[in-house]
Image (tube, rainbow over all chains, first blue to last red; front, side, top):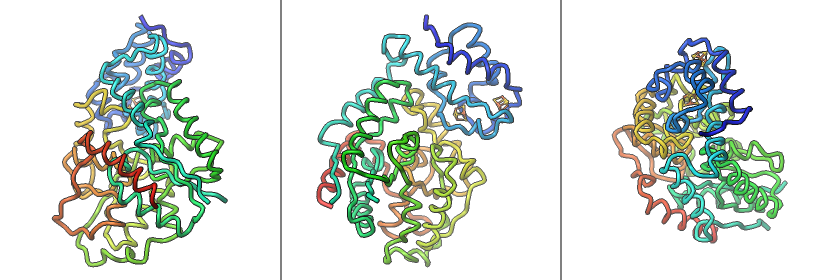
Length: 122
Length: 251
Ligand code: SF4
Ligand code: SF4
């Protein structure tokens, strides 16, 4: 089982204790509205069980629209990102979803000389 | 002050010619312009690969330092949002820069007879950068286009659906978000200033133009079709990234 860092758990706990389940964030977030649970439930469950389905953690678009509309300015994106970071570091660098390997390959290709160029101006 | 220019990966994968035209135009105002054609590493940051991201990001910052750039002009809001986190280099968005130096003479008012009404998909990584939102509206109006803003725009913009690597992790949800975003806009004719947003708006059922399409490309009228969605093809995207490098070698 993944051992989440204290900083990640603190972020999640803060959301679970502060969110008033007003659902304002769900209105225009397809991810949260399809997910169904309000952030207090979602992160409350995470803190209690120490688990979150990686597919959920990786479905947030990290767009921070929720933070903008939330009466408490809760930063859900930062919490999901922290969970992602722990999912990788606590799992010996293995990616929790196989489709994410494409991102690694993409990064390797991006650094090929075929695609990079640097020129110092005069 | 020495300047540099960074197009970013997705714009390079979309349109090499317009990257080239933008750089030659900028060189009229910044003759000492350096070119930095490298990835900022944001995809790694988004998936939580913090160590690999930092390596990539520091490599980019080192290149900017090597070119002795004081201020880097960035065409991609994703790259810009990452560079904003660094104290090592000053960064500025391409769009306020263009609004300040002015459009090329041939572009000013070129669409004044167009019946097209565009709305704008603001990029979510720069939702708090109001000067960018204003510059984009200004540039569109200077081109001669009519603009109808969405209620959810500027600071209040929604993600196009591609954000956070959701398109890779959960493509079905990303597609639903794209469709939702297009539905929240007042017209299906959508201007973006991010090549990934443009692709997403098309995948969500809209017609979408990148701001550079409108500056350097033909005038668009009601009913016209937008350029094809090249980012949906991995092969064309990489071919274009290679072509962008070649174009940049010669500007
Ligand atoms: S940051 Fe995530 S949870 Fe918040 S609105 Fe965007 S997609 Fe939804
Ligand atoms: S807007 Fe804020 S308080 Fe309301 S449900 Fe969402 S996270 Fe909770």
